[in-house]
Length: 176
Image 1 (cartoon, helix red, strand yellow):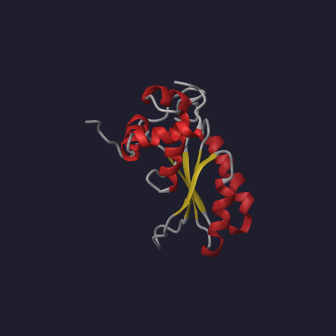
Image 2 (image 1 turned 135 degrees about the horizontal axis):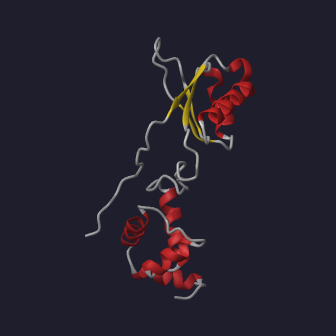
Image 3 (image 1 turned 180 degrees about the vertical axis):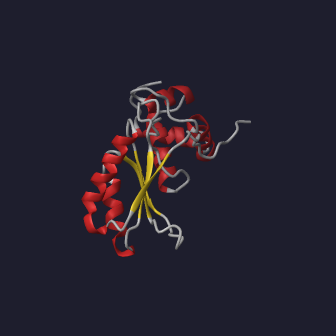
């Protein structure tokens, strides 16, 4: 397989095999993750015997068509030494949720941040932000920093610490 594929070669590859069959092969090969190499698309191309450009084109098309949601790194925080992971939960007035969520989501120690409905009176929290640290004191310090960042918008918060790792996987297909 050549490292460089001409546009005419892509067209020939497109005609040679139905896109749905190509997409299925790509999904089956990547559903457990992309190859852990410096050039994962090249490794995938070699495995599937397809041009790199075609794989990238088809994956982009599947993203655009919402057949796949995203391509992202999913780190194992525990293996990286971040063993005190805490979901910080925040009571934020509705009119400030988007601004606070965007701010929290931009912090390098927050892996994900989202809005969830309140369940009053027992659960006033509407913004959730996963904070990672090597120990609980580090997580607490980061949450305190977050509180200072939003000042009076913080109507109350708490930290729910992880007790175990849950295996996260998406939909899996079986090859025939």
